[in-house]
Image (cartoon, rainbow, N blue to C red; front, top):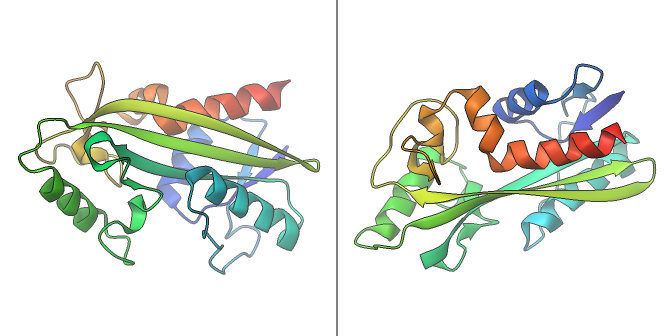
Length: 190
């Protein structure tokens, strides 16, 4: 089975392909010749995932899944949330995003947060969504050089390491994206 994963993020593609069974061949946007920016105008994480999956199906005719992920911080009323990638501006600069978040949490005791991933699957004319959540907290400073995005400042509950310090195989077992992808795999197996 071939499925398009609506992303240009090589790290995400690699992470998800490692989770999928070998009979599912993942195609990237580059593989199908999609070079335009897919609209992400929904005010919700779910809405953006659905919007991207439906865009690929409508414009390219491929069965597809798309994800959207946000980091939701309790004391910031769920921010940065749907704006996680552009939190410090349109450049999608991970370091600037982390620095802005650390600045906003300076002197705050409650550092609880969660990563939320929603995957929208457009398959055989039907739409399904799968949600994965990983609870944790924002650290006081950056640790580790693995992962991407906010990984160096997110410590999952029950761990002493940040996502950036964990081996990919370990991170995939507990991460928001890992959980959502597992739900997707379970669905595809039925």
